[in-house]
Structures are given as C-alpha cells and as structure tokens.
Length: 358
Ligand code: NAD
Ligand code: MN
Image (cartoon, rainbow, N blue to C red):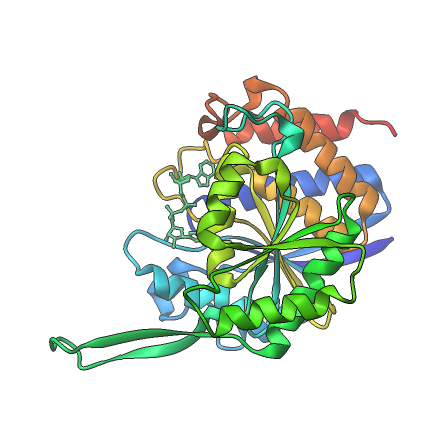
C-alpha cells in the first residue's frame, strides 16, 4: 500500500470548513480505492495562533513541511488582522521558501453550473491560468520612508529575473503543449511597465522557439479582461505575472460560476520540495460558521493533489464525483444560487464515490 504524508493547514474562517469536508471525502476515497492511504497531520497555524503567540506558524514552519509529500491548505485572514500580515505571515511564508514558483489555476464551467456570461456554453470556457508565484510585486521588496510627512513615499518594487521568468515560461509552454489545443497566451503590461514586462515578452519569444507546436500570442492585461469576457473560447493556457494572474484568476473563477468552485496548486515542478494545494478563495468571514461554504473548490484542489501524488485513478474518481454533484442544482450552495449546505454537498460526494464500481 502506498502511503502519502499530507500536511493539512486549514487556517481560518471557511478554510477550516472546506478542508474538513475534503479530508472526510479523501478518507472515503482512499478506503474505496484500497491501494493508497493518506497519513494526514494537522497544523493549527493561522490567525488564532498569531493572536496567542505573535506568529502564524513556528519560525521553522516551512522546514517542518519539507517532510511531507503535499500540503492541503484552506485560507488565512481575519477581520481584525491586517491582510498583509496574514498573507505574508502564512501563505507566502510557505510558498516562497519552498519555492513553489508555478501556481496553476484550472478554470472551466462544471456540469450544472451556469457562467454569468449569457453567451457561454460550458465547454467554451476551459482555461488553465499559470501564475508566476515567486517574483513581481510579491517579491517583498520596497518600503516606506518619511512617515506622516507630505513627502512620505511607499514603494513595492516589482522584481523579475531572467531565471525566474524563463522557468515559468517553460512550465507554461510545456503545459500548453500537453493540452489538446496547444495554445498559450502570454499576458503582460509591456506598454507601461517597460522593464520587467518587456523582459517577459522577450523571454516568451526565446522559449517559444523550443515549442514549435505551440501556438502563442501576447495580450496586455487590461485588454485580456475584455477578451476573457467576450471571447472566452479563444483562450486555453494563459501565463501571467504574480499580480496580473492573481486578479485574472478571480475574474476567471467568477466567469466559471463562482469563486467557491476554483482550485489551485502551488507547484515546485522539479519536486525538490512539497507542493501546496488550496482553493483560490479566502477565509470568507461573511459566511464563516453558517455551514454554507461551497466545498467544491477544495474537492477539486484535492483531486489536483492526488494527481500530483501519482494517484490518477483516484483523482479522476474524485473529479467525476464533483461533476455528478455540481450537475444537480439541488446540491448547489448559495454562492451558486442554491440552498444546499456544505454538509449536503459533502454527503452527496461521499455517496457518489461509494456508488461507483469501476
Ligand atoms: P474571499 O474569497 O474570502 O471572499 C470573497 C467573497 O466570495 C465573499 O463574499 C465570500 O463569502 C465568497 N466566497 C469565497 N469563497 C466561498 C466559498 N467557498 N463558498 C461560498 N462563497 C465563497 O475574499 P475576501 O473577502 O477578499 O477576503 C477575506 C479574507 O480572506 C481576507 O482576510 C483576505 O486577506 C483573505 N484571503 C486569503 C486567501 C488565501 O488564504 N489564499 C485568498 C484570498 C483572500
Ligand atoms: Mn487572490
């Protein structure tokens, strides 16, 4: 029996609700499959810990995670703690030292879910957004000076390195090549941001020579929002910077029906360190504790994790169960316009997994 060591970090708010639901489903899936087991260790890292100890995770937190095969993360953020503290104190404090530089965000309209775009039928919107996950505006460089004075200055320096851009570009071209349409759109803002973004364009053209079978084009990020909305079928694989892809992927999630169904993987593609899997949404304190968080994003996230761990049949079974559940409007949570609870959706997932005999 194969055993995978999983670090579960539910975090805050609905992160806890959706990770609990997913672990329950994964447990049923593993026993149903019989050929693998998940050895799950729970970490109580998050805002409560910060309030008690002054730190979201221990100083050697990222090193502790190196012993695991994968990390399942919920969300971090609380109404009474500044968002930049929570983001830098936990999520980025894991992604950056573990060099999870490729953030992969698949988006498609699942069966039974309607895109808010009137003209879109399901299959037309089927994208994978690749977010550069280590550089750009999230490199942590910058500062403030002259506090309170009229000449107070605040900078967030956007850093791009040849090595950093080239590795994400190669990853994106490889991913585009593995998909049926072999289509890649490189998103920048190289008209206004004339250094880092011009480097992106240049490296895209260089890397493209190694992928002659991939058709690629370039878009400016502002025009990209228009194309995503009006011509979703013209896109397939998309690569963009940390900031641009962060924004575009929330738009993508909304166009696919709800941020409550959007998954993501923070990958170290070379597998030198464990990768981290999480829904793209946050801790959603407006609905925390109400039992109505949509767990589908985290179920899909868990399927990506199983795929990464080499458990392809189990990953496919999990995605099949997700699609069975979304196809039934009675199992839609309020974010999708329905009345179902997290519990209802989780129970239906478990039945769908138990029911299959192939
Ligand atoms: P959010 O994603 O938490 O919520 C945005 C809206 O979408 C809310 O109305 C929420 O109720 C809804 N929503 C999100 N996930 C849902 C789900 N699974 N089911 C149903 N509805 C869902 O974003 P926000 O409100 O901007 O941020 C809340 C907190 O989360 C902040 O502290 C923020 O910093 C943090 N955050 C954390 C992460 C992360 O941990 N990766 C990501 C984004 C935001
Ligand atoms: Mn985001």
